[in-house]
Length: 87
Image (tube, rainbow, N blue to C red; front, top):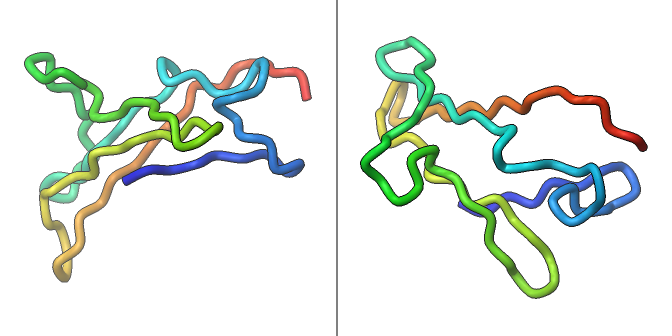
């Protein structure tokens, strides 16, 4: 799954100064009704995320959870480290 994050001005947050940094993102999978931090040290992408270029823009590529929790759905949650950014 590829996700583009933009601010209110429509600027891609991975492409601007003081924007998002992939190191600030944590991925959680819901497993047996509990949120668990996803990190698989033995994978090429241990956090299950990477940045990719699509044309001139940067997207977050996310590997969603495959653990089914309810009615055939899986749940994946992202958290972002809050830091002081200039607008």
